[in-house]
Structures are given as structure tokens and as C-alpha cells.
Length: 289
Image (cartoon, rainbow, N blue to C red; front, side, top):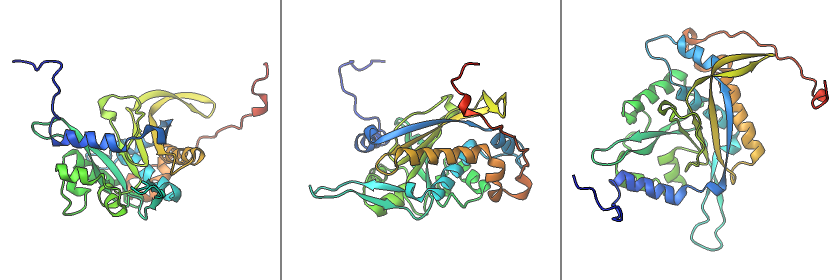
């Protein structure tokens, strides 16, 4: 087998690869974003998954999607995006607001003869959807049956469709990308944490679940936990608002027994004991013992 000379430029490896290049070149702007990172205690989420009725429980991505959608509902100012100024020098940036709490999920696609790439599948109104419905939709994506999450009749997998997603009009964005938020979860690849910039105004990622030391009251316990990252567009959210947004997601996941209860079937609900958190005398910090 003859390898090409190292100085010879290779053409793009298929249309999906070319579409990914266009997406990154046009829309990834790290200077416009900040990324926050939080460690999340998943004890309640894991117990809900372990005691889930039926042979297949929901994935971690199911709970992250739900937490993200509920945070969008609680912070409506975060559920929007900044549109470009346009071609005219006097063009002014505008904010497009989204009525529904839709969440896009990054899905890896493989095409014969080309490199793997990532496309978007949309979960509509994820804030009100039951947990088992979101879980079924994500399992369908894993099985590459993306019709469960995409709009009926929406073409999928073509280069023209991927490029059309780059259009900046409000209608095209809502139709092809859903809304403000994207979830990318390479946890199964063994990555501990993901810090990146995404084409959506809000990008949420998480790494692999591992046993980690967690403070429980005044004790330290080893519990399942992962790192949750929030990448956000600073034109849409200021830093403090984004911090509260991420804190809401963390609270939702760490108190999944109560927060998820309205979206669980009765046989999937679990009661969790309340942990007493003692008050800390912050005035003593920094003083010698």
C-alpha cells in the first residue's frame, strides 16, 4: 500500500467531514463564550436508574437533558440566542427568543467511506416530557433511528441539509437546531471532563461517572459523581446569571428524587432521606486554632 506524500494536501473525507469544517469555521467563537465546571453528586440519579422498572433504565443523558430543559424554563432570559448583525454596516444585533424549551442532542453519525461526524437531533418541549419518553427518544438515537426526535419529513444525513443549518434566520434555526441549548455527552468514551465551545448559545457536556469523595453534612463519603460543564454565550447571559443557571441544573440532578418526581411514573419514584447540613461559622475562617 502506497501512502501519499506527507506534503500533499488531502481532500475532505466525504461530505459530512466538509460540513463539519464549515460549521466550525463559521460558528465556533471561543472569545464570545465562558465555560463553568461543577462536580455533581449522582447518588440519587444512580439509585433511580438502578431501581427503574423494566429491563432498560434511562441513561445519564436523559437526566441531564431534563435538568437543562427545566433550567431553561426557570431562566427564560437564557432561552434565546444572539443573531448576527447582517451585511449592512448599520445592522444591529438582535436576540431571538424561544417559546419552547427544546434541547438539541449531538449525535455521532457514520457514513460509509467518510469520517464520523456529528449532527443534531431535537427533543421538543423537554421540560414537560416524562423521563421515560426522553429515555426512549435517546435510545432511538443510539440505534440511529433519529426519526423519534426529529420533525416528521425532515431530511437527514445529506450535506445540503447540514449546510442549511448554518442559516441565521429565526425560522431556519428553530426548525433545524431547536432552540438555545445543546447537550454533548462523550461520557462513554472515558473522558473525565469536557471543556469546549459549541455552536449553540448554551452547550452542556459531562464526563464519565466515577467514585469521588463528596461532603455529606460533616462527613466525607465516596459517591458516584461526574463533572458537568456549561459553555454559554456572553452576549446572551452575564456571568452571574450563568452561574445560577448551572447551580439550578446541579440542584436538579443532586435532588433528583424530589425534582424528577412529577415526571416519573409512580413505580419509578424513590424516597430519599434528608441530610442535615450544619451551619458553618464563617467568621472563624482564617483564624488560628
